[in-house]
Amino acid sequence: MRQYVRSLISTLVMLIVFGCDNAASGLTGSDNVDVIEHVTFSNIVKNVTDNSLIVSGFLTNNSSSITIGPPWYIECQFYYENGGMTLLIGGENTTISNALSPGVSIEWSLTHNVDNPEQYENFTIDDLRAYKN
Image (cartoon, rainbow, N blue to C red; front, side):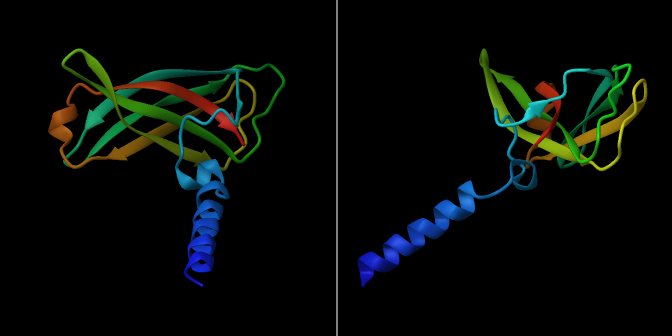
């Protein structure tokens, strides 16, 4: 009976972990997405608050004919340097629920909550991208 319960619990945990949609779970950096290639990010600003790291900017649809249909996502990873090593703090994504026509821009912002933001005063971002699931 114990073996059955253990097996059942293991199966349920695996279903929960692997059965979730990437964007809904907050998982960033997945290779299983369709990266939107015809966009540019600009005017990127980084801020540190009492409990978070914030990055914001504009994204422009550079296509002459393709509208980006909802839902789509913007994500990035947050990093910091420590003793010559680049360390990952975490990642964030946001869902965009609007269509973005060719030549149009949208303002975006990503917030990553941290316990000691003063530790990350010079944080950097990378892996900034727009994608569809």
